[in-house]
Image (cartoon, rainbow, N blue to C red; front, side, top):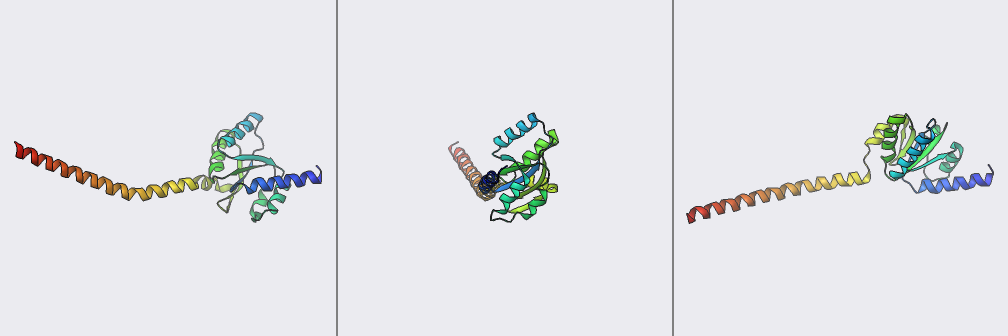
Length: 173
């Protein structure tokens, strides 16, 4: 490969990596073509960009970015698939689900929510809540007291009206 071609690939990798908030490095070696096609389809369906990259080119692209990715470099050995997403736990869930049936991919390392994770922390990554999930939890917590007050008022008002109607019906009889 020519030096100019390598430079262009590194620039493309920098742009792609910079446009996503979360990065996973996975080992997909050993998957047959059907399994690889299914994995790519699942990635597409879950808004995950998957690239198979040369380790040296990926490392050079990471070195050229503003963030210090030194903790990921030891994982750059063997075949590496790069999974990029703007939802922190989406690739982890996909890796866990797909590996259950196929034995691969295997997590090598990840950069999620501005923190580094090793291969042994897949379960932690699956459990991380996305921004939208956290917002939903906060809204639910904020609505809970208001719902309790409203239901209490409705119940009290309903009992009061029922009591008044009962009193009026007894007077009329």
